[in-house]
Figure 1 (cartoon, rainbow, N blue to C red):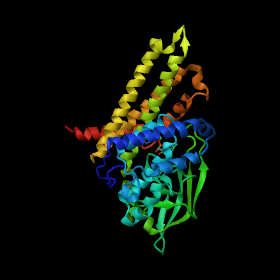
Figure 2 (figure 1 turned 90 degrees about the vertical axis):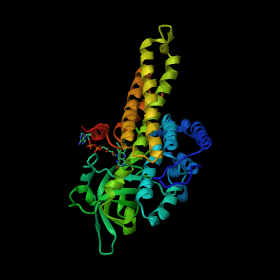
Figure 3 (figure 1 turned 135 degrees about the vertical axis):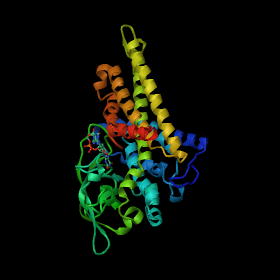
Figure 4 (figure 1 turned 180 degrees about the vertical axis):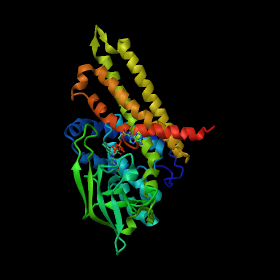
Length: 394
Ligand SMILES: Cc1cc2nc3c(=O)[nH]c(=O)nc-3n(C[C@H](O)[C@H](O)[C@H](O)COP(=O)(O)OP(=O)(O)OC[C@H]3O[C@@H](n4cnc5c(N)ncnc54)[C@H](O)[C@@H]3O)c2cc1C
């Protein structure tokens, strides 16, 4: 597969190998995934069998280095996989995406002992999980979290607090979890630390959200009540690094959300293209009406631009360049493209868009999340503008 590399080093893949991997994903989607999407989505059911198959294909180790048993894929290949799966069903990508963000935090910032202990089990999917940052009072303003980790006389950390909206909270067993080791620190980020938080006494799952979309993957609270974590599960072994560790993976995280947006935008376009050639009004397929062609023309353009921006950001990432602005631009544009294309496709489907017999309603429900995750699009535009101004000071 890809050349062995640390996560921050340049990764490449032989084009033939990439094609073979993408073909395998195609076959899996056709045979196993597409036939069961509606059942799982409409009933909000955890796709246990598909999760087993994802583990067999290596998806839980997709971006983890080969030296730890992962596939060590470049960000570009990974983005293409996410685009492909999301063009049919975005939600299942969340099962391995959130997990890989946790793994990336350990791989980038963990001690040698932490990497050796945790990454091989993350790579096989034996231990699966996600990222636990958000709290009831703190989403965008991450530094406002209230979870506190205090060191006791044995050197362990005792955590108390509540995380909310955590993907894989029910079905996962381990999380990269942000807490305050010094709640009084100023500036606030200096008192934040990131832990490898595995489920055991003191860490339980709270309320599960009944969501508009993003079904089948669970989003729930994680509650910590005198939850004890050994000191060797403090990522990197040094307090006060958590804010940077948690936000340090955002480039990859944003490329990932952008790729999901591309998939949703392209999938909406595919469905609208098919439907508009089948449905007839005034004696001809609606695709022959200019009003529909105007919509399709815009949808094609948005989907293409979203793909190119996402590949641009992921290629820069794979070259080892700083690409936070590129990743932010791709995330912003692709997520808005997902929303706009799914809405336009709903209009093209007319009344049938409102029937759960058709897939387009799922794209419509799933798209909006892309504008919220990995930094809301409001914040995204502000960050892009600030970076732009910094680069263009007069
Ligand atoms: C389905 C789902 C899955 C999720 N999965 C996870 C997960 O796995 N792990 C995790 O940690 N979190 C997760 N989240 C939480 C997600 O990251 C947060 O919802 C997101 O960061 C926004 O935070 P918030 O909801 O508290 O909104 P708020 O921060 O309250 O923001 C509300 C609004 O105000 C705007 N706003 C806030 N501050 C500013 C500002 N300074 N300037 C301008 N506008 C501002 C925002 O853009 C937004 O429009 C998930 C959320 C959802 C819905």
